Length: 71
View 1 (cartoon, helix red, strand yellow):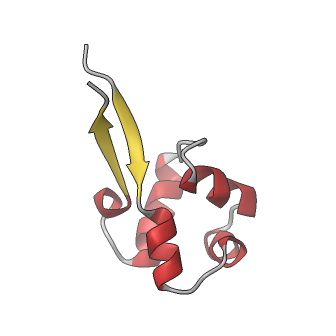
View 2 (cartoon, one colour; view 1 turned 60 degrees about the horizontal axis):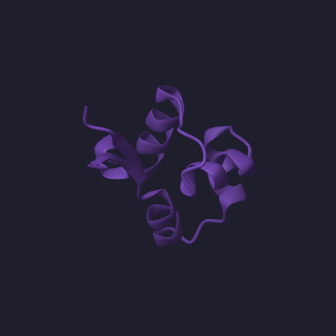
């Protein structure tokens, strides 16, 4: 069985816009801790959060998040 790990580019997109984690959290209606834990991979965002982030950055969800094979 192939196992996957979720990788993300959220911090890269956030830094490009010179946003703090709090700025981004306020913009999409979540806590700063949520942004932090998504960026570090400790939390997998819900579909709603992933879509809000994609809309905010005007990118496809796949540009923010991707599955990497661990095998």
